[in-house]
Image (cartoon, rainbow, N blue to C red; front, side, top):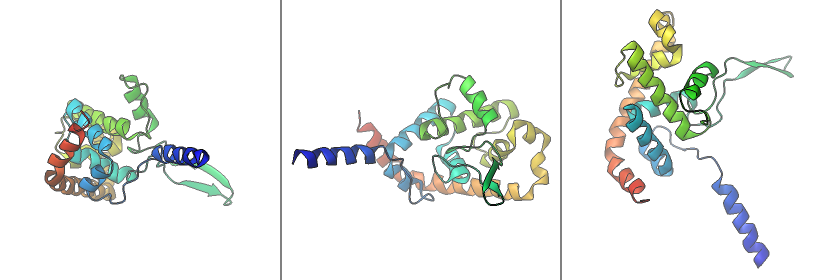
Length: 199
């Protein structure tokens, strides 16, 4: 009996360490109801950077579909030898090495890209920086995403004008943000109660 209880305890501890993966990524209420810690992290990022939760979540939806260890595909030489990945993008926010290095040097040295709270904080930090240096309103999700994808230098040079496909993606992210915003209005009070309940 003791061995069975010990085995159950071990299995529960292992399952408790499993990374949360939302099944319905198009509904922000279902995402946050499935893991209220994520909502708390999103609220923290919103308060710190004054960036909209629906916009940050729409970025993450586009970049990784909320997979913690998302990475770009890699090509294979002769179907055997793996070639380098197309970029250094990694994690929930698909942050590339230069941007992540800048972020960690700005007082976030212990943050990691495959942690949801750190990743959404990075997105808020990046949007805040784009607002400060490029004058993009934080509510302008379309332009914010173009700056996120192309980098701030690329946005200044308007490199997105040579990428019609990217403009379509930015429009898609904007619409996803609007959808999330409508949904969040219906469950925000319940989510606030859920995280307040811990205190």
